[in-house]
Length: 328
Image (cartoon, rainbow, N blue to C red; front, side, top):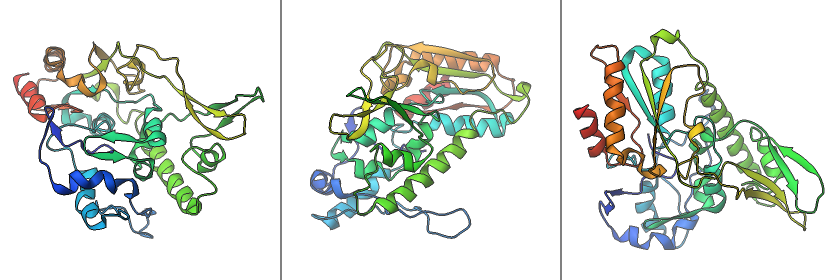
């Protein structure tokens, strides 16, 4: 399952291939974005079912050639597949008898705001730029976000309020991703609310058991610690009255640089063992000794049938994961 930012197109630090559009992409990528249309579930609208991103000028033709790579399925490597843990758990929760064991690596089951930071600030990866205009059009990051309300805080001591991440109107009120002055404000608001509704529906399936506890295979959690990780953010109001997200600086080392250890377990009452590594989030599965230990114990604790071991492969070459799985 691809991440919301698409693959970095690297394997072991080496670019898989290089094309002229990739080299020229920084000149056109700020205008690339998906069309904001979707299916209402009843066949009433078109769904974003292709990778035909729509780049603006300049270099429209070259931009169209490169645009699909932004959402390329991470088959060459495991990069940018952070949703894999959530999807893997959701699948096992639906049919626990189909797996002999499950290893979840770095999945934000408890909710995390780091993806909002990505969307608000954008950034650069490899040969393309990740702009808010691009990141905002993907629905999957909202599946990672907490469901509780957040506090707003005035820099001028004007009191506190709150914003509700489940309502697009609240995002607009506090200047998070939505700007009422944007000519596409209404369209973007509808798009965001659709993303939030779908994310909430999916997250609801992650926190309840669909079967008796005895039906589930052994589960292991691979979590990183020792890297400064921001636990949350606040909505702040500056002296001019402008609102927007302010990401907390009171970082803790109880995380992998992206997620806290406490956020990486499914919020259900099952016996799970957590394996801690000093690796950062994008290299969790490269701690092969720990991965081998976890897989070995999963096999020992398993049901002894023909079921396979499910692995959430994130940010690591699939060749490495395949070798570790086969050896275990």
